[in-house]
Amino acid sequence: MTLPFKMLLSAKQYLPLIIFIFLLGCQKPEPEPVPKQLEKQLQQEEPVDLSLLCKNIEKNMLAIDADRTTFALEQVNQDLKLCLPLSTFEEQKHLLTLSNQMYKNFLSVERTASQQTAFENYAFDLAQHPTVQQNHFEQLTLRDQYMLKHKGQAYVELFDSGKGQLNYRRSPEYLARIFAPYMPEAEQAFIENLAAQNMQPVWVKQSLMIEPHEIVVRALFWEDYLKQYPKSSYRQNAEYLMHMYALFLFIGTPASPVSDNFLNSYAVQSSSLDEIEKLAQLKNSALAVQAGKFLQFLQLSEEQRIKHIPVQLSPSEQGAKNENLLAQKQLKHYLGLKNLSLSVPRDCFSDAICH
Image 1 (cartoon, helix red, strand yellow):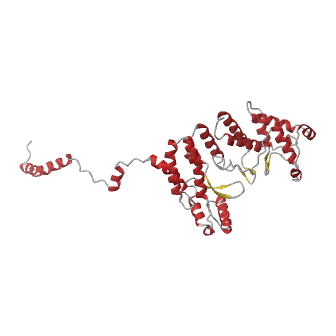
Image 2: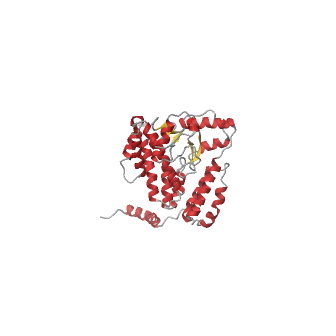
Image 3: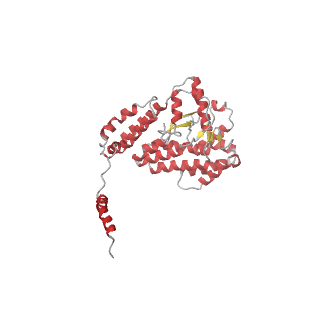
């Protein structure tokens, strides 16, 4: 079948246009110009001079004070992550000490008496009701206003120190995340576990905030830690923690006593007695031996205690008018508990290390 002459003529007219479109489709598109910002990102960045960075890190840490920002603090922490893997253990311990001072300087705030009162009231209300808008924010120092707006950044947080006073602290997670991963196994285990234990207050106003079961778990952990890492540089601190948790378990604290008189098993808090009875069943544990002796002590009469446990109250203790004091002293001697106190200078309950 042949096409009419007019139709053939029309096709010939459009043939050049069809060929042009076909050739245009086969051509590769011209690359679009790269935006300048993206072009800079694509360019190879110069490698960081770690030797120079780590050489200057001590100076940068010492430069952090109460006038610096959380951003400056975070920058130093990022540099520490780069330098710690390249440092010896002695150098790591030196940097850790510097980090303690760095945060101490950063968290210090000078206040007048009225500003201190305003801060305590504001911080307490903020801790109790985080979503409530406060009316006295402007009464705070400018530094407090900045710190409260930026708490949660650079491991800065509000914390009850145990005396009923809220203040700033460096979160225990700081050392666990920044330092521990690059330290020897014994020190890493100490820091990471103490950080986890101290995320929440252990005691407030001499009142225990953890249950007897948790006290037993922690006391056994530190006992096992000492067996596993006898040469740890934190050995003395681990011993202190084990002895303190033993005191919490068998004696309690002034505001959370295990018993008022230790006359018998009925005079002991039931939750504490249950955990002590379970603990006494364990093998190869000095704490378990103490738990067994605790149960034996409860069976001794007052006359037997006086006869077989040679302790006496000092004149100051006799004047304390505390009927439970003699029984406590007898029990401590009978179990071989250390005579430690919550008011001692060593603080092992607010950070990932002891201060």
